[in-house]
Image (cartoon, rainbow, N blue to C red; front, side):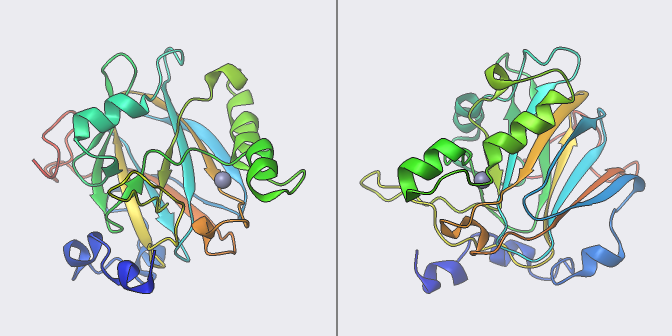
Length: 245
Ligand SMILES: [Zn+2]
């Protein structure tokens, strides 16, 4: 990934004039009734239930911070996010506004209703102690897999419940010959992605602590999680038409 690629990120044109980049989000956290608002420190994790119709906003406060993400049907967490079906339904490996996150039983768990970054990763997976040893020769590193295990344990879930995950604000380009890599992120300070829950959804998040590849710009930073109820008539009606349709 070159500096030129960074400037040409797909979300750049779509977000012009949105007024949300550059810290505006911090002053006005939610375009609706606030349900929850918290900052997750660098390398931290969170789990919780987002109720149907509520919107979870993930804010990349300082930019270039990967956010590893898993989700499950709260009523029966054996039904969970399915990366392959999500990609097939989207027709792309890069997710943005209008795309849905599907469960392994064909149920939309979330719809992406707003996105100032423009592209999120479905294939890079999460970092782990073991993959860091294999890839970088380092031992006992903070990692997203351990974060997921801590986050999931609060809901009685564990190793068997970790599946291929989504990465918000992570940049994993794939070349024409199939080569892929974790490259410099292109999210800017204040970029956000808004996820409308299409059912009661259990979410586990790792604010990636990785420092051995460029996914966090070499310096893990905090993120903000804002849950809100969108105003009626805002085009965010539960189960309604995706924003991009
Ligand atoms: Zn990670």
